[in-house]
Length: 98
Image 1 (cartoon, rainbow, N blue to C red):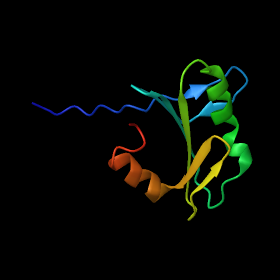
Image 2: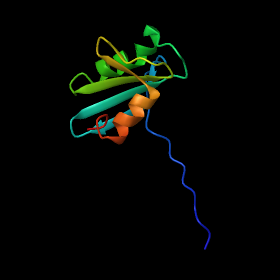
Image 3: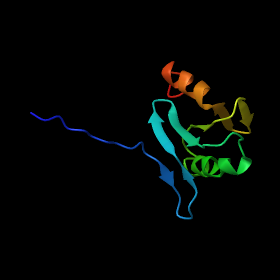
Image 4: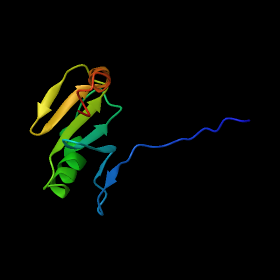
């Protein structure tokens, strides 16, 4: 019997005018929106989709993360910015999708 490979992509969100979030997950505590960038510096414009999905889901709790290749964690208003390794550690430890 041959094995089957199933490829699944994580759910994402996109507005009618092109604002998007790379990953959107629903948890028992609300939604988690994640924007992932292959950039060494986080730019405020990367937050556009995160702010829009939060407005769209206004009646639900939404936690927003930005993930990038930089070295420093930060918080810009309601978006928590994390270096990719910090994000993966938090994901592994159950802190991101709690």
